[in-house]
Image 1 (cartoon, rainbow, N blue to C red):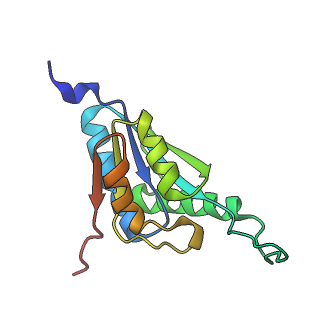
Image 2: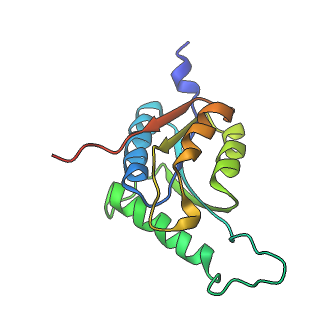
Length: 147
C-alpha cells in the first residue's frame, strides 16, 4: 500500500510574507500530487495590555489578518484558487496555534523568516518552534532567490 495516499490535510502557515507565498505554492504542489486538502491558516492576536494602559488602535486585527490571508492566497494562485484549498483565520499566537493545528494534520508547511506586513502574523522563530514541537512532519520553505 502506498502510504502517500493516506495524506488528507496539509496546513500552511500564512503571514503575508514572500516566504509564506512560497510555502503555499510548495504545499499546494504536494497536496495536489497526494490528493490532499490544503488549509491556508493565518493567526492573529491582540497585543498584550498592561495594567492601567489601554493600547490605541488595536481594533480590527482580525479584519486586517483576513485581508492579508486573502492577499497571500491570491499572490500564490492568482484569481483561480485551486479547489482543494481552503482558508482559515484563527485567533491565537502563530507558534501555539500552528502546533495545536498540527495534531489534526498530516503535514505542516511554514515559511522561514516570514515577518509579513502585519506584526501579529510573524512567522520567523515560529518555524523552528514548529519543527521542534509539531505533531506531524514539518516542511520549512525558504523564499526563492531573486535573479
